[in-house]
Image (cartoon, rainbow, N blue to C red):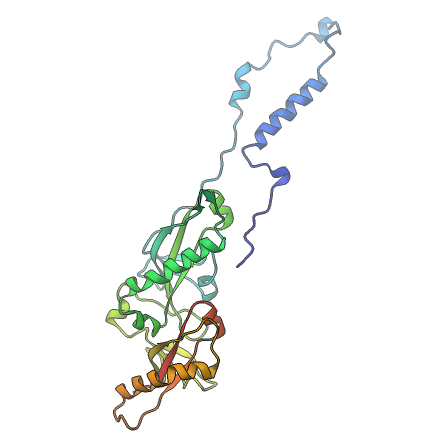
Amino acid sequence: MEDRQPTLDLLGLDDRMKPVLLLCLLAVLAACSSPSPTASPTPSDAPSSSTAPPSAAADTPTSSAPAPPPRPARDGCHRLTLSQAVAPVVAGTDVPCRQKHTSETYKIGRLPLLVGGHLVAVDSPSVQSYVADTCRSTVGDHVGGSPEDLRLSMLQAVWFTPSVEEAALGADWFRCDVVALSGSGRLALLPRSTKGVLASSDRFAMCSTASPDSTTHKRVPCSARHSWTAIATVGLSGQSYPSARAASRQMDSACRSAARARAADPLDFSWSQERPSQEQWKAGQRYGICWAPAS
């Protein structure tokens, strides 16, 4: 996560205190420059009668605290790059959903910044985990289909929160977006609406340019050119990251059965399997993927 700690102002003063400090300094300087009370002024030293009224100080303008950024709009669309999509704070460009876009907002929520009566930071582990879990658990309701359909697709949830500075001004929202990976280090363009897209189309189903054990294996949407198709997922047990052999023992039978069920000849078929990477395992992916040649 990026460093969000705001830079502290000189002496820790905020903008509302600076005019007050200025008035105090002016009063001190005026007292120091006043003549001694024992001195007898000459006629030429007589004070002017055009002194400021007592209420003049009350008219001195004071600066107000900046307003927090506006709450994001639900169901908005955005043009994001892949790096912007995985950033912790909002970036990219908001666009009408009828224009080309790579992300769509499907949920706006409120951050749990008060825990046990204590205020917690927006970038604290508890807040970030809450946002991640909420966005991941609700994206399926938006795109439709089954949990297995979502696992076997190129669609993913991403999320954004205010910066520490914005949260200090009162921003307490989080934003969940859905994006689709294109397989080339970029995000794929989305339809005008992704509501129910997995239930009505295989446009974002997961395919590959080659077998998972090939060096040219690259995941792509099935709408792109491909030679292999993701056909099933298999849950992996254990708390530690499984070795290739351990994952194969757990996945072998299930993947073989899934490939046989879709083969034209149940006695002549091919299949392969792919365990999650260490990074995916750390992020919470506790399943492997079964693959078969595209029909």
